[in-house]
Image (cartoon, rainbow, N blue to C red; front, side):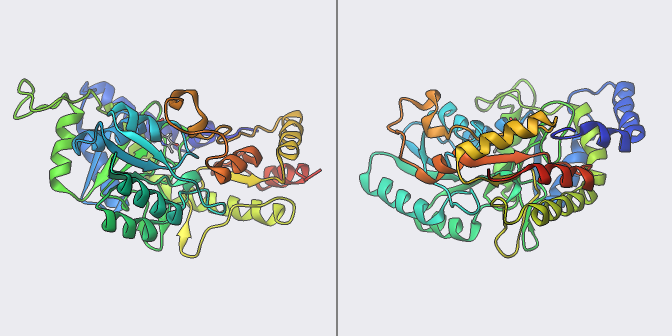
Length: 372
Ligand SMILES: *Cc1c(COP(=O)(O)O)cnc(C)c1O
């Protein structure tokens, strides 16, 4: 059994993917070929934004808007400590200061109440300027954008949605990727929509931001390739990756339905044994991960070992919250600062989750799980 079965997906669309890749091998426009434009239009349409800017990774998709907005030293960027390192790494890369805020124990996403208090406090201290909040749609579940929007307008913050895992999720009929002033997603192979290498995209409705992102993506280019208006990056997506994504996007709505069915089935099998992930009303997860909570670390680790003994892979996302990482040791954080994130990280376990998981696999996995 596999944690994510990319081969089953490839076999389903092999012929079409191979044809698309072959088309790139024929036209040789490996960089910014026609697939890029086609993909950007289809992605923007799917998410429901005016613009999509494809790029080299989810990390660069987070970095590009921060660069465009001129975020830097002296600026506070608020985010969750319970996420992948990239979310906070980009804050450091532009020279700004990450300000962590604890999570909601039910959704594992940034707690809006705690965010309000922290932004107010940082504003009152007058050392850092509150500029941006990066909510993460963790495991596929969109963050509490109603709450975050209110705080952002009161304190004049920009919202950069980290939809690296959230792509395909929605609140009511609004899709993940459309909630911030800008949103970043990732097409790393293991994400809900993945390519065959690294890739990412930024979404926005802001035409000025769009043109700045397009420029920063290619060395800050101006009118033409050899006039440079600003410092940028080499952050383009390869045509081959766009070709792969175009075919995968075709089956993505069907795959989302399958993920939802699998989540429902896990829920049915596991309810009462462990805490299963729920969604607030009108929230729909893309089920990037299916993560359950045990009573304690011991119980989690015994279950993990037992699953491994039966050749069932599982993963701990994330074993160490970001405020405790060595990379951030110069920031004034210590154990105990974010008790909810710390507690959840000690008890959480993510189970195999992909659209091609069989019902019999779910039953087998679930029957092996118990609190001990
Ligand atoms: C995967 C991920 C990223 C980074 O995406 P890459 O494409 O790997 O650079 C950023 N944020 C979150 C929450 C992620 O899960």
